[in-house]
Length: 197
Image (tube, rainbow, N blue to C red; front, side, top):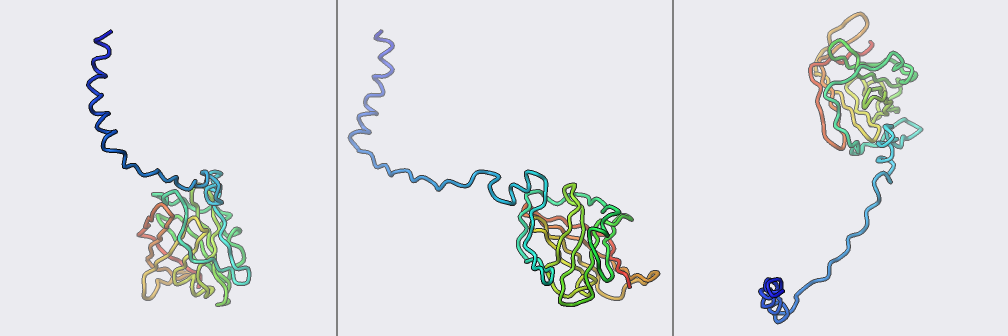
């Protein structure tokens, strides 16, 4: 029995030293409770694999230019839009498409009126998304390279400056597509931006 008590006897001087010096402890502050996961609209939308909705001005179709909140990185390779993408885009005066590897991966258009924003269709996370533009200017803004967002992702087209290549009623420029989410950004170079004349 004595052998079992002996290890504890060695701890007695250390414990006594702690009592003599006193405790200089500070109370632990409790952190504010954060909302449970999935309680924001964006988190809930991500859980059910649906894009979050961004508030669009109904008068001009303009989406606010906000930092995207998507939690997934943009895909390494873009998927082509479906044959129903023009229907999703709706009525537009002319339109443009970003092509990469011979496939249309982004489709955009706008009304001729310069007091309207354009809109676009792109396939992300297995969902064909319709995104409103962030700039007014109608067809001219779309042709020069639009920026669109659905709040989760922001998509930008950067077309080359200068004269386009003219092809059967269309104008074509070398271009790059950039997709940004809350998790990061990915660039898709070596594409073309083609618009109806």
